[in-house]
Amino acid sequence: MENKFYITTPIYYVNDEPHIGHAYCSVIADILARYHRLFGDDVFFLTGTDEHGQKVAEAAAESNRTPQQHCDLMVKRFQKVWEKLNLSHDDFIRTTEQRHKIIVQEILRKLWEAGEIYEDEYEGWYCVPEERFWTEKDLDDGNCPSCGREVQRLTEKNYFFRMGKYQDWLIDHIKTHPRFILPESRKNEILGFLAKPLGDLCISRPVERLAWGIPLPFDEKFVTYVWFDALFNYYTMKNSSPTSGLTLFSITILRRFPWEMISGPPAFI
Ligand SMILES: [Zn+2]
Image 1: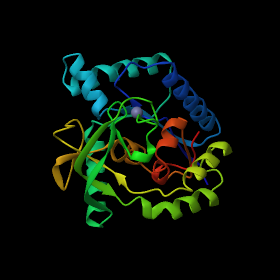
Image 2: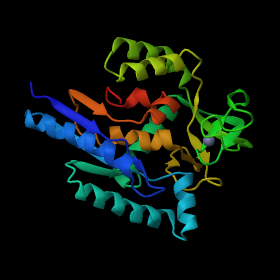
Image 3: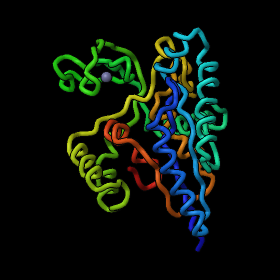
Image 4: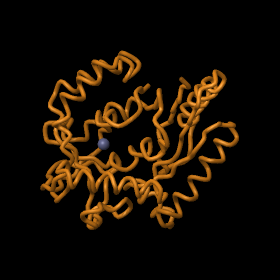
């Protein structure tokens, strides 16, 4: 049987210029794509850009542009570099494209109808640069435990995905699929993380605080948050069922949200 090999880079965040880290990861993906093509595999190599969120909105405001103008400008820079590096990707996805938004909204609607998403009050400590909430016990000396910066106290209505109920399934999946997370050391790190209760995932932001995102199909006063937007690019562009695949990720992404592992192709680096 012909091997359908699906490979993706992470999609890159356009709040700033492309740098050597982006190029490093993309070149690795390109080498793997070319290697598989040499052996006659049916390869689909995807890369792209993550364009919503607070940091993009802020970067746009600083340069007196609309977020869309800012993204259009930054994306060209990424595409130019990829051209110079002669990358052989088959598609380039932008999360502001209609083809992506439609599928994200469809997934959100289905999960809402199935009761997998619910509304609740959220109160916590918020790290603005990283766009995420922390609980009191997470804080490191009163500051963000991830980046060390100051946090703000915030309470707001939001929507949550029932991620906690998938914890056992996720642990079991990782243990029974030894190549799901590579290398081994990272797999063990994530399993260690999953030994603690996972909790549910806040998937929205109120438009009044963040307008630059994909609106929730069941409440237009909210946009969805990065993990229900950017994450789904790997799914929206998967045009057929691959028999094998690889998604390259930085450990920072992997460590921050084990949820990443639920919907991606089978392996991470
Ligand atoms: Zn932080």
